[in-house]
Length: 155
Image (cartoon, rainbow, N blue to C red; front, side):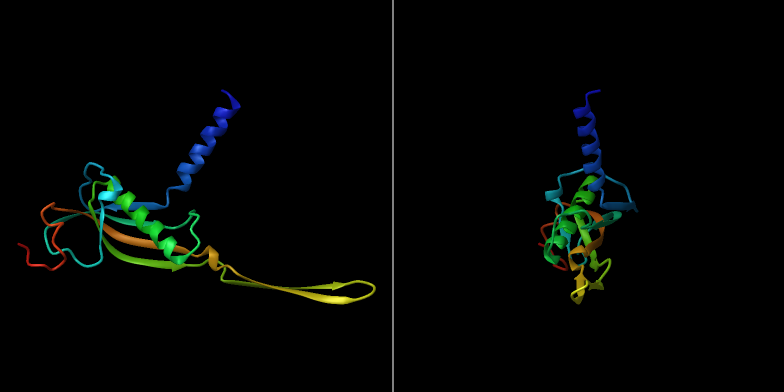
């Protein structure tokens, strides 16, 4: 096998693994997958009929997003991809939270030479390494119910 083909296979497997930052636990019957852009996010209970498919989780881990808002968008996108893969056309969003590994670090290093002495001090805040996490319930909403806002009486 050509070494470039092997490198490509390793990079492809690494990329595929890096993208697996979402998961699900089935609580109903999965359906035929749909496109992620067909999945709607619901912040409040759905007024009409719907079927629960799975509890889904996603994180912004391994993304190149820096701001909290951009990381939240990554979480929502990954939740939609996970829901769509199960045939869900909606997500009842439960929460989006943040976690940070290594909040603050500090060090003091003495530097003594023959002519002078000094102390170098450094402080590191690793807020850039915060990760956003999201959880929701993937649902299938009847097509005639999707156009009604939550708690609306309907036509």
